Image 1 (tube, rainbow, N blue to C red):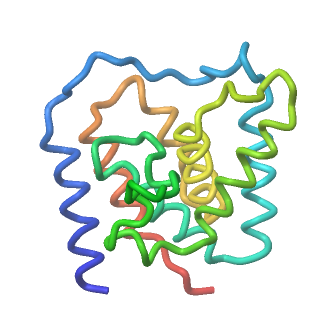
Image 2 (cartoon, helix red, strand yellow):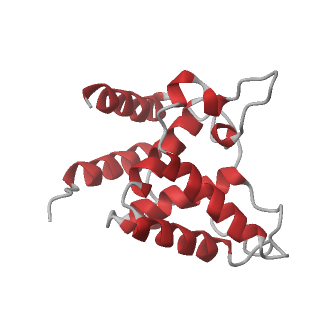
Image 3 (cartoon, rainbow, N blue to C red):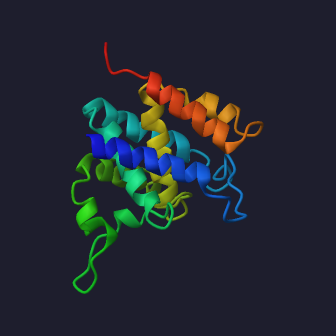
Length: 173
């Protein structure tokens, strides 16, 4: 448990200390014209999975962490190995990832792809991020407050506020 906490702290600190490396601009509602209901589709699948088992929460968050930690958030942790290539998913560091995280993203991607307009248009990386966002919001962390301040405050301050909220969160009933 201590090693996981230390690794998480180091990851968060590295985000704070690494300068902006690219000029890509993320924006809300990117899929508004491509697949207008993608966020509600993903949220519904995540809610169903969350209602089945609480393991969905840490499994999805940890899956996102393992995906983003190695060369960015590209959903490469979801790719299965082939006979001649060992994929990131099967790397020894990732073998302990809970199946519920993979299952959540797989089901969300399948649900999105059932909508003709959305089929093969929404990336697995984006679905993984949406799913992680949704599981966090389902455990009553204030993700919406994070987004509302996103345009007026620095990343470091936002990350600090997010870290503070996580520290204040308790699983006690």
